[in-house]
Image (cartoon, rainbow, N blue to C red):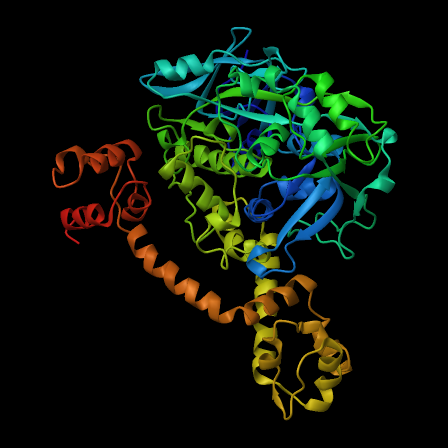
Length: 621
């Protein structure tokens, strides 16, 4: 029935879609298998992309030739750049999205991608021959062969949905769970575990009183995720709103705790620490009299509202009665209740940095199956798994991003090296080189790498080269040109900045925290004509590089020193058990993780500097 494929991708969520697109765009013949063709790229939780650190990941995916940034731009209903009051390393783009349009755009892009075939069925097992993965077995008993398989099962592996005392199998509301794969992988020597996540109730927006809430509008001049010219910034935006719980809400919620699956012990898996349920919040932060809620529209042409911050697994009656105690929600109507879901995952220390399973060659795992939470974390893993699956079967060198190269590199290194026993979410604080890994320079950092791979097109590389050239020209201009008090003092006075007394280099004035490049154009028509010939993203890039020049140089120096350890390779067949000088703990953990380099070994929890010294001596260093 089916010819052999190069890569089969199991699951069509955010990870699966990026994996299929990446492998296909590199030239592999791809089969994307999903249990429901109508829910490809479904936004199972909140209808939004990006946010703190996550926005950087979306821009990195775009720079590497992935589709998430383009799809997010085309389905956006609001754009905000978060943390603009902080340093540039913290700026994070975020879009509110039309849930239906997002899925439609993703499906259309995949259908327009050559080399991608689709099949609707559950995958109940893998074909394993001579210890290698070579295909799948579907629920209909169909065997489809391939050279590599990427598993992106999300929350569907033995998924159980909890609402109060009720529980039933499911991978998402209204959809059945997937069975068979967990049991097979465990039988093949892999270790499994359980995690949980949750979602809030959906509300009829017509039943809300928005006058009792705080309005949250998008940026006055909205940006976008994709560096390409395939998308444009929004010209109109929908507002979101902010509401708050209160003691009455908390008291009513507590009445349902005895029936809560979380408090009764029916839920065994650990939930996301940084996206807790409303039950978690009022228990862990009992001293707080209110919690913030974000009232987010689901799209341009729907009244459905997503209540961000009210994730819950309490019974539907308790949920509904508590909602009516929130100001503005007194007459609310609930479309469907919130729920918690438990699912299987596989601790990611069982993977190589390519996301290939150590125990089963040619099998790759990406997304929530690796213990992460969030669309963006899943999408970037899918992208990297798809790339590396293609490279493996074409006998090419693997594609691995370092911690100083991308947030994607930080995420995968954290997972593989340290593992996780709770849903992993990316934060800027996880990256030690975040001044280098800004959202504005993701194209400069990664598009050349993608171009070398064959994922980025010539026009993308030309845009990066143009941006680099313009950035250098602006920086050179500011460092060589002087400005007089007459030219700049009126502007400095308006901005509340100290005036200058003599001609100084423009660079020196720009390094003041409250001054921007465009401020120099206020009373200087000659400079205005000069600077506005550049695109705004080029102007912004030059400004950031000049303002943070000292920090950037220092961080580059630190990264280069650490990189020396990354260049000392250990290999996957290193016999740590024979190094009796190492502690028992070090031998055990190094044998389990099998780090590829000394740098990765040093990041394993429990590995001491003396252990690293022993390894260096053994290697003759």
